[in-house]
Amino acid sequence: MVYTIYIVLTKTGTLLSKAIGMYTGKEMNHASIAFDQELFDMYSFGRRQLNNPLSGGFLRENAEAGLFECADCVIYRCRVSYYQYLEMEKIVHYMYCNRDRYKYNFIGLFGVMMQKEVRRERAYFCSQFVATLLKIGGLKIYQNPALMTPDCIAQLPYLEEIFAGKLADYLQDVRQPAMLYG
Image (cartoon, rainbow, N blue to C red):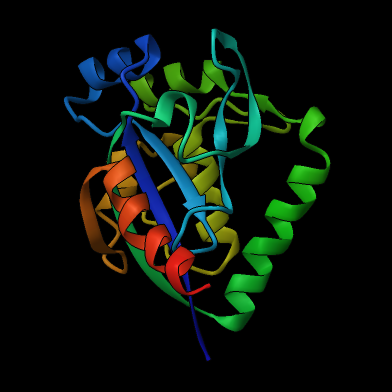
């Protein structure tokens, strides 16, 4: 049986996002993974408090609120096996239950710039987390996850782009029909 995960790349407009964009030359500078089309189960590493960019860590993201309210996005679909889906979901569940033990890998961002991995225990930046999770799930990653940007993830050949535009528009399209009939 085939299952689907979703990779969500966003342009949130934060200072950190703009700085990363200046370095990469790319617009989409935040990566998340979701286990449902409606993006209710969407996870990444980012800021825990809206007004504090230094409060980073692992979190379940609310695609409708905060930095995502006006965000542009590109959403990719990835077909995986039942085993791959369960393996990735199991890791995310464990991380979420232990989220206070995980930190945002700010130093790792400088490692990307220098093309040198910065290892920190239980610390990830967003695209490093997504790439690591894909690798754990048995999907081919073509470089070290600690050096991958959101654009590197977008280049993975098994991802299928399904939407580009405002995240709010995507959510309205996929969530509203369920509300009418659910």
